[in-house]
Amino acid sequence: MQPLPREPQHAVLLSIGIIASPAATNRRTWLREHLTSTPLQQSDVPVAAQYAFVIGNQRQLQARAAARLQRERAHFDDFVEVEARDYRPYAVAEKSLGWLLYAATNLKSSYVAKVDDDSVVHVANLYRDLSVLGQFAGRYVYYGVLRWRIWNTSRPNGACGARGDETVGSWGAAELQRKLILPRGGACEGNAGPFLFSDGAFSVFSAALLAELAALPATQRFHALRTSQGKTAWLHEDAGLGFLVYETAVTRELPIAYVTLAAWAQCRYWLEIPRAPLGFPDTDTMFVHRVKTLSDARAAVPCLHQNELLHPEFTAQPCGGDKSTGWSWQRVPQHASCYSKRRTQAYPCNWGCINRLKGRRKQPLPGETA
Image (cartoon, rainbow, N blue to C red; front, side):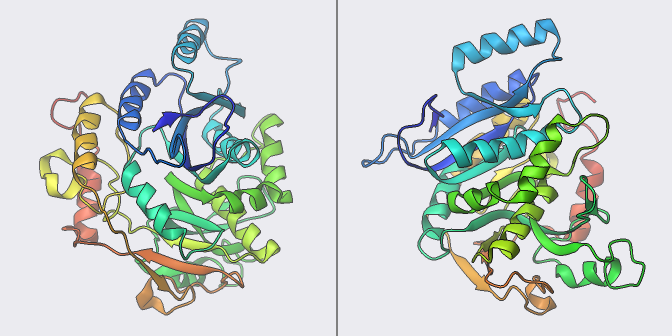
């Protein structure tokens, strides 16, 4: 994999935008090592996949930090600067949307990924997934660990209800709707949804979907908030982007394919070193999140390279199926289709086990400082 060229000239399958913190120089060092060591050359195109670190404007960055970033940019030339305020608490949301709009306008890429800079993606497995999906999922694809959310369209930061682990495959949208929408005077009565959004650590959009999303009036309203003052902004970039996908599906009447990965089983939200089988990547793992230190990276990256899934399979599911499917979507966009990626092995941890790990992970891992 190579950095995004300054003037993209060749069609590629995948472009990855890593939403970067300007100060996280060390993370970018090992991310570059991981990404550039992934061989994805094809005979018919010079580069099959490419990446870039996404930053916003640096107007309020301290002089020393700004100089360090400038030297790094000059040396590696693998940054994309988008219209976003990198000095605000909501910089991640603005940069995420800015990257997708940049990609829709400037890149010749079949798929565009948005990734946090503390996530490590199994690029080879992702490349195979997208190659397979291209054979049956159609032009409009939204892919990731999909969760349920509700959105209040009357305010910019409109995520409604508490964020939890309401993923496809747990208990579906029915319970969320029953609790938050259906009761008269409920917290989210009259709001949009429930709809699916991809966990912000790792999301993939097809180019055709991005082109439609970029032209949506709601998208332009979101993007215009980057010039606002005070508290008028949106913080929930993952739920917000999922809402825009949902709006695109409904208003454009598009046959969007929602493709979900299984939370925890097909991703790792941290490396659980003391209990390696639970935290370390296996053949099903598509990404590892919260890789914040060099020691974490040295543990995660070799595992990804050693565990490849050569023949991924996807199963079509009824979007409005019963509770047993984990979908049970009450307000399915008219032409939407839903798919789950099949697992090759059972994940050795149930929800109670995961909750215990959540509490333990707040403590430093061996060799780390608090």
